[in-house]
Image (cartoon, rainbow over all chains, first blue to last red):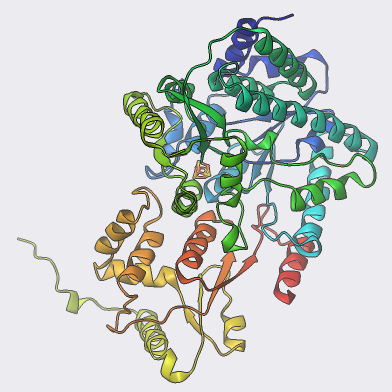
Length: 389
Length: 173
Ligand code: SF4
């Protein structure tokens, strides 16, 4: 059996590697292999996989990438992920990527899709506009056609038809992966001292670059190793992290929250792996199944319109309750309108339920963690000392 | 020595004057909505749903225009600060905060009269999530009905049949 340290070291290596060596090696292993990059927050990776291609999650450049060119493309008052993603492109770190999907998450990513077309005219680029209307006969049928168009575009990249059986098989493989991802989240919520979030995070990040089958195996190895490892339980405060669904926090921020005395028992870091809340059926029309799952069983996040005002915040409250969380930390990227404009509504909903919360902002390259440690530490102490529960 | 020209000397184009007149006329109508017995719909400029609103004989309140109008008259600083005091982040869209701050101050139109609360929030979403969150926030404050029209973004610069059908189905809904 593998040791936790061995798995963590492997994941850390993948996380640190801004050249995407593992993906390059995968691509070079067989002629004709193709890689499709995607940005947060959700794309149906099943379709990419069904075409025999590797979906590559691109989550910006992180804390170690020096952004020089990227800043020249943007005004100062927007978040960092588009700058560092441009930096990755102009420094040829993504020169092996055959296609890029830009999901609808905000106008920054939307406009980046247009820039990509101008910058890299030979790369297949698609702005993937998911419906914000969740009625079967309205948004549902629109989404079915969107998926068909996407499939057609992907067929152009992989050079073959993507058959229904291919998609069904991929749906099954991603269902398995999602179950395993959820198993890690459940395991961490139950015994957070055995699965620190700094480990869980890079384990999930590995899923952005590895073939899904390898990632599923890695998760199984981690679960077995983490269960077997004897780690002391601390009297930490259980918190949910909310608002980090697009530009990612530096790993040091996650470590700082933990060092400050918090166990993260749920988060919204890489929603693509947990977007669908139920298995996608593997029988029947696979495109219709993917669409129906999206329309009926997708998670709640700031990237979605909530048509019913009375439901605002219910999902977050439900998560906090089901994870037995004692508080919520809103941690959002600076200048992130979707997360930051959502926050007051969610915060009010939490206050109405007497769930404590605090908020701070970050950039993917934030370096100064002392204020974060102080805030998170004070929050944890406040809950432990003054909470009525 | 150069001196700053007097604003009164600036020659405006006819279209500017006409625009000014139209906007002022809309504000006059809005602030008299009660007397006129008209319902008010708040909506955005992109997505342009004027024809639809006019069909129902409703008036148009355009929060972006309110925000920019207040900014041009140097009124929005205080409004933005008020919204920040209410918990809004200092680095989010100032149009949203100016609107929310204006609401807290009684939604005073440029003619000095209060604007009525909207009867309907008609959200035309065209790919900018700020719009979506903005109207969720307004709905939270006004508690009024919100209807959304999602107009897909033309990523490839062309309107597909699927996009058109989606918009038509939403309009029929
Ligand atoms: S971090 Fe926020 S503002 Fe920036 S691209 Fe992502 S969703 Fe948009």
